[in-house]
Length: 101
Image (spheres, rainbow, N blue to C red):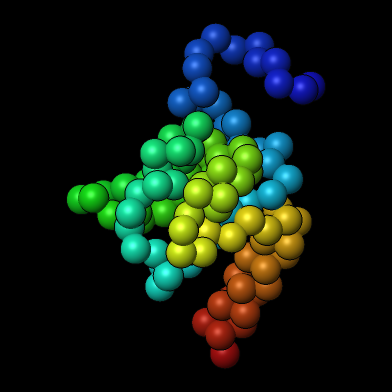
């Protein structure tokens, strides 16, 4: 259907990250919480609490890569969405196997 929405509203209620082809992956250990990613993200997808980055809103992230480009310490890496989904699926599978064992 493309980018058209038949329902009235705005992007807050609409999943605008579903057509992303690349995904930023955040490395918490490398992050200095400088919040350059927060400042430059055009979709306000960097989640911040008490002055520190706590995650990424993938519901709205379009994978533009600006956050990874602006990160001076390499705490954000842009990966292919299909690769990220495959890794998540494997992690869930391993977790389920560990719980059932």
